[in-house]
Image (tube, protein in one colour):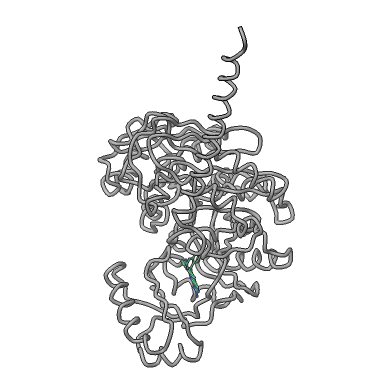
Length: 479
Ligand code: MV4
């Protein structure tokens, strides 16, 4: 593999190219008109303009990207996350054109893209599942009987849904029919597939996911867990590894279960198996993400691996260079997603120019970044600017470093989620590890940040008064 085309933008495009360069592989990337001056374009050995700003006229144009790959003699395509990364047809298109798709086979992408197909695929693999229906609901009265047996509240989920889309909680029996009708029509409208199923609603779960890696020779390993419970509206904001709640035994069991899920779909490459963990530390399989995830760096840090390098090596047909026993946990890593969003204004996208943009650096700090000072944040794409990652020997160390790093991250011109990060990393519930997926809803409001601002303003005022008094004293020195 001499040249890789990176079909993405921003921080992840740069992240992938960093490893390709390290491995002596040439890089080519694609870009839209609005990304003309983006760092990912400058960072690549070659860059090709593929279209206008909207993703469906650029980064989602599979045919065009294949054309570019052929014209530039790329041997492989890395899709990053989002865009074409979980598009089974694109993976097939690559193969049909003799280009290696750095990811799993389309077969695995297809299965895991449907929650019901995923449940069906893993059913012979002894994977713990939330009690519920295994097939699309066709008979509503029958489904209601099942719901009654499971016990309310229950959750209706769309098979084609994802990221929390197409879910409905049903609190009691009387709402069952109306919620079912709504869920089905929503699923038809949003996904063109009205298949829904029901599950017992786990009321205050933690979201724990396991990183897995598989090669083309039948070897599978897991790289432990990431705790991703701190999210708002299904958008993760803070992730960490390892989780502060898993025991070594539970960690082992979840790792083994994740590997079985990967085996169930003949997985190849880097993947993530998502689980819910309830109050009694029971875990249940949710879904598998068939891509490299945003939060992969925390796993890389604690396992001392380079997941992009492993993806590339596996894609070249190499045997995984590690067996399970080689993978150990070293220290603790935290990640904060830095979004161009205003935490004081319901996290609405904050557009504008990065008037000031300087990143923290030093021991225990990694920033996976896609922007630079003077650039505008385009409205066309995900508003994530960068990921701030810190690590230390202990969880406490990683958290202290994070607070310090946030203070040393200087962004002016737009609002960001950095102050929200301070709120999370100072919060007792987060610091003590006693939190679940309801953390943000339960504890956060804009008033908390305003309080924080007020405290800082008070301190600034005190410092100013102090300096003034000192200066006055100097001036009044007797002649
Ligand atoms: C659940 C659940 C509770 N019970 N399933 C949300 C996204 C999708 N991947 C699955 N999700 C959930 N499924 C049952 N049976 C709660 C959630 C959920 C959630 C899961 C992980 C992280 C954050 C979440 C926030 C709200 C709900």
